Image (cartoon, rainbow, N blue to C red; front, side, top):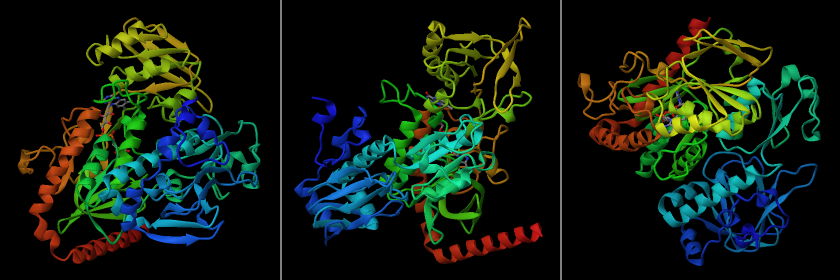
Length: 595
Ligand SMILES: Cc1cc2nc3c(=O)[nH]c(=O)nc-3n(C[C@H](O)[C@H](O)[C@H](O)COP(=O)(O)OP(=O)(O)OC[C@H]3O[C@@H](n4cnc5c(N)ncnc54)[C@H](O)[C@@H]3O)c2cc1C
């Protein structure tokens, strides 16, 4: 018997969806049945309702949908119709429940739910669901696990989600694809050859797409609307991947950055009852999210991809009610009457009693002519499955002597024809872990070029040819190579804090005890603002230490909030009013300057 047959759960399928043919899909975990005892506990969070046959419960694109538990009757769950035919992907019976990842966030529903026969259902409204997730551990874990597996199922469906259409290797197309992957958003790629005007797929053929130069890449939404060359922010807002901050609320803590340290801080803060928002400039995962495999993080003996680790952590945070404003960078920070006011891209304010800065670091760039022209068109800073597709069976270059470069070289050597690993130093010994050095040395598909540097990049629309020089011998090598993975250390993401907190010479945030900072290792020079992870001066640049710091800092936040309880209790509305006045004044000033 096939594994999927063995695991067949309660929710039956009226068709054979493609996700079920995926050997990694676990239908038993995606569609668990609630017990009678669980149903009795769930009654405290919802109310019973009866529906006739064929009644819609929620539809595609709808946000903040309620959860429905079947008491009697049955529900069909179907994908957006393709060519006029809706595909049923699950059929819920007694004690099954509806919903997937969008139960925990504000994304629009990717599926439609409809009763099949007259049905008696327990409706659990969204605000009650959040209470349930915090109070009912066992049921919360069952729901959380089901939502992950249902999303994995949806990711495997050929017709779920959105369609991304454009030219392969195009920089904007690559960025959009990376955004979908890193946010686990179901999508399908429709590549248009560079010399072809319109996509061949009837689902996306539209006059608006007939001029590829001006309209591609484009995203075809589930409701048929087309976004031409959307920005990441526009997409995040449109699909509900961003949850904007509540303007009427002062959060207990705002976490800036959703790398390992920020995600850890968010999980600990929310699980300990703090009202928490995470603001993330691109996508959850940070630098770790760009790693194909992290092998030294405790508890994962065979390694885990950074993307997977981040997805799990984000889910854990969502379970505890964290709000995520994804793809919104924090631009400025100030403190007014003890309350922190952060301004996000687009002028959106977030008010918060405490701030945890977890904005990490980003890769340095090579100083070579034409470099910027080839970023995302042959120059990459991550080596994940997505980038590897762009260089299959071709020669590639990895630059850098650290562990991340070593990991990338090993990962790519299994996909590319050959990896040229270029480092400036005489050897890898001082900069890379021995286990990685051994693997590089024993690989016939990796050539290490020490004391070497890239000096020339050439190509028309994308990178085609690279020249490097051995500084010791003076020998120059030119190869027809279209993919260079640059991993040469990182610079702190602290530009938005210049003039606000004290930084060290390299721009990392100074913390802990010196210069009268509060006596904790994570306090910055601004009261109530803490810094953790790679952005912190003298931190150890590792996933485990970032996670550790993010977890530990929350006890400092608790202490700070308790010490300032009286200040915060005094008229929170007046603080909000003061902040709004300050915002309005700032806006007026900006308009004045713009005249
Ligand atoms: C390819 C690669 C492989 C690695 N492999 C390993 C490994 O195997 N083992 C290991 O221990 N370590 C590894 N590391 C190091 C590890 O990933 C980092 O130490 C860790 O990610 C640091 O976490 P962080 O949360 O402090 O910062 P980051 O991971 O840098 O996350 C910071 C986040 O903040 C966001 N951000 C920045 N500025 C703003 C702003 N103004 N507003 C909003 N958001 C903002 C960024 O978009 C980012 O998502 C690797 C790093 C890389 C790049």
